[in-house]
Image 1 (cartoon, rainbow, N blue to C red):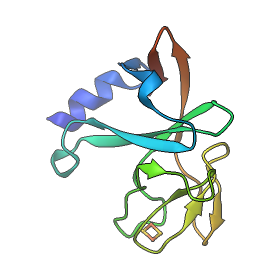
Image 2 (cartoon, rainbow, N blue to C red):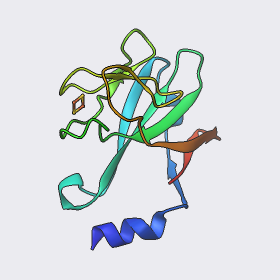
Image 3 (cartoon, rainbow, N blue to C red):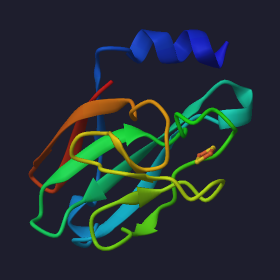
Image 4 (cartoon, rainbow, N blue to C red):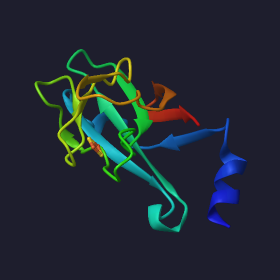
Length: 118
Ligand code: FES
């Protein structure tokens, strides 16, 4: 049921308030329903230069890991704690490890909100 609802939101926008609370060099998670019930979770990263990136928090390594919110590794990578792979939020590519790239989403910041196209 939830998966069907999420399909309705595909290619639509979600709005996330309090964008200014995301500090440079950090990441936060956004839950869209419960992951164990067919929902999903996004990760929003603010790079040290202030640019933001959005991605699926599910690790593409495929062993059940989820990318970590909090400080970026070396100020520029997100990390999966399962096998400590590092990913570049700007490109989605794995920088430490071997696996496919992250699934990324278009994001813009406007009037204190994040607008994400999913
Ligand atoms: S499951 Fe994420 S690094 Fe292995």
